[in-house]
Length: 418
Length: 125
Image (tube, rainbow over all chains, first blue to last red; front, side, top):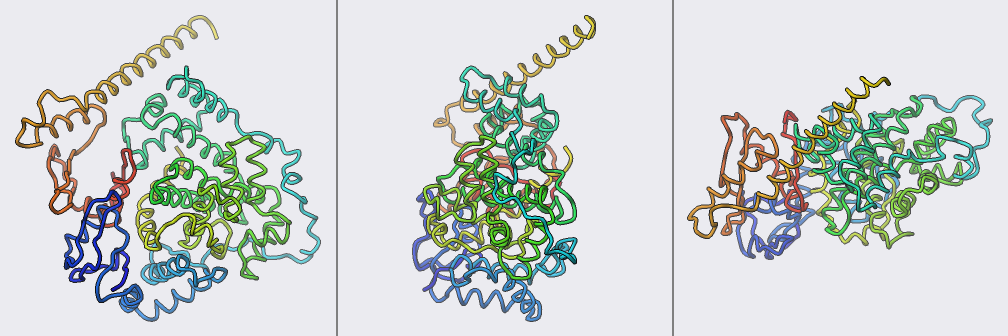
């Protein structure tokens, strides 16, 4: 008897334990021989795993590997092993992500311009002669942003929106009026409201209608994320491709939102925005200390350590520390600040499960090669964070499957010109 | 800004606001009416009339090429088509639904307690 992922269940297998849907619905009884129709029912009701007689997860993995050309599998395993070299692959969740990544890399090798580890853009400039003469970097997050007017405050439109939301007398029209004063934000919000995330295609043609249909609170959360994107659209080219940086952010946001659905207790909107802006500090580093970032990225690549660890070593703080400092200065919501500030150390804020979730979403985004935030290796998973989410390992394959469809549309909605 | 320009601007604003108000009232009216039916559900031998009425009201709110309603078959737990209004659309509904089920987007939609939308497989709609 073994517990198998939904994707590994095959017609003819016999169910060894009743399969119950998340809402308590009895789906398949013990002893039932599976058919294609039963598998469809499992997928409809979000079943991620089932116990069957005469099979095991290891055997299913082996069967999946055997279906792949050995040479492609070998190359994929090598690439994935390097990608995960900073992780404890003994951890069940990491092991499962590694397995899924190997299969995906082997199956898609050469397709869609797949960007494996070796295809990723490295720093445009390798360490130059005289590199040791880099000027000292600011010694703290506060020092890095001191005196920078652009870092001094968050666009006032967000706070006006927040105030309007807190005022029971505010109408949708009033909120739309505030958003309407920022043409760029208006256009992007309308485009987002018309994306498959909300899908009111051809109906959301005005902000007031957008506020009414999407909801004021959600629209304000999205306004926050979009405002951050707009603030950093001019980071210097060269070190990283800006679009790929934002693709990583959007990937993390989509993963965070879907994982939130599976935890059944967290705010989808807050997690989407947290995922979108989790690397805010890195954007500031790229903008303000590009030469140091080049050194940091090279260090991470050569020494095979996560980028945030290289930041910490060379600067004394990492992008999460910097993001926290900036967001606090901008007076953004405290919980959002904590999520961003601790996404590489979620065990320090275990009472904020959203931090654990963004931590996992970030890791999954890097593991899957969605965009590129400069981190050449998958950062280590915090076991405490994983445990705090209470998710089965089998949810990972399902989340990857569910996210695929949303990634492309969200990227277009947020990054392409409105 | 001179008096005439200001007048033209204010007139345009009023027209826009009136259109907004009418649009909002229409949507609200449709939303409020969604759950109210002239026919008693318990007196019907089939859910189709209720589903047709619901589809018509949804079409008042959102422009749709096709409306299909799937209901749970309580014996198999599968979702089966119970009503279809496709107005001659060439949209391959069953293939799209099968793909949504296969990648568990359908399951995601059931778990999110609000309307969920997904692009078609080829991204065209």
